[in-house]
Image (cartoon, rainbow over all chains, first blue to last red; front, side, top):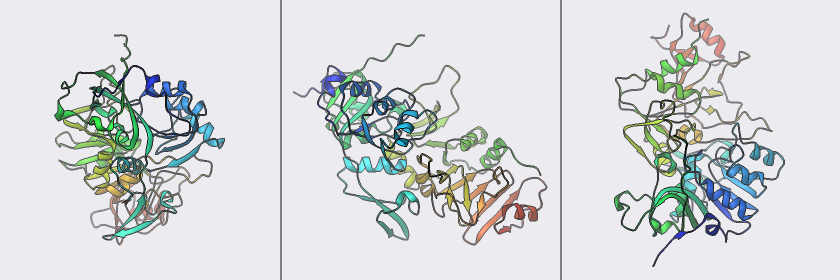
Length: 226
Length: 216
């Protein structure tokens, strides 16, 4: 019997060790697994390497994780924002290493990890300082930069619906990094709005097949005032 | 000297986007172009975070936090729109499926080199986002920017002094003073705003410009 449902976010992250590489889904608030990040902060793991498109906003979520000095390194494409003060402070203090990656290269490096690719050539960033020191190659008259996959120990993502096999659907642009991070991590924990019985998800619309997902936590959506 | 304001630059650029085009509008200034796309054309807007077919801004109160663009602003979806993950989204960009992208710029060189992500200041926190992917990936890279910096320096330059976003990638530049094509043999002025004489545009720009027969 396969049952990937876990009772709580805390239980789903209990074994996450110090020094782990953790992918965190989301782009802006869309797809951000806020409750899983809160559970990670409470859990206490430190010296983490975090992979996310950004480096946290305001005082919650990833920003709070950075503010609590639990992140050793961040791999992202766009750390600087008007409200990225926790990142800015830690970065300027030299407490946090930054690996800046063009957004499409970040996505493809994550995808490549999940797909078993050893490395790939991309035209993005050729001739720029983000390609300095990297192997390059001219293929068919075009210049490319060699990039390597990003593997993770854990991925924390947010999806919409899940069954106990771990099949996932997403909601609108909240999908963003979810499917590729799920495939790139050894242990993928998805927080979902709704859990359903096997067979209730139309197989034609499953976006992330359960093989990529190890743990599911249902988080009831906040009730908003009407 | 008559100068276009930012909305007028966006409106001018929007006129050149043809029916049926797939287009990515960069965050910030280029997003304005959406407001001026001709209503009689079907133009499909793409956003890096995984959406094709972006519609108008939602009415106040109708925003959905799961439906945003790359600038993290709430948007709507047109009939025929679709959602996809980030690697597919950048596959569309890098794989040359987008007909146009519109980007802002600090500088564009005579060879079409683009600098728009980093001022080069040593203490600046760098952030690149999808700009480098768009610069190499879209079939046509359109830049919209002011022609001159605040202290009167041309942003069209012989060689970019800021770090590059992409080399030899810009096809056309829309400024508050002119529309300029970047070609293998140099910069061709397509259009000049108002009554500005070509020689004056040339003087302000600094780098050599070629005059098209159709340009004043």
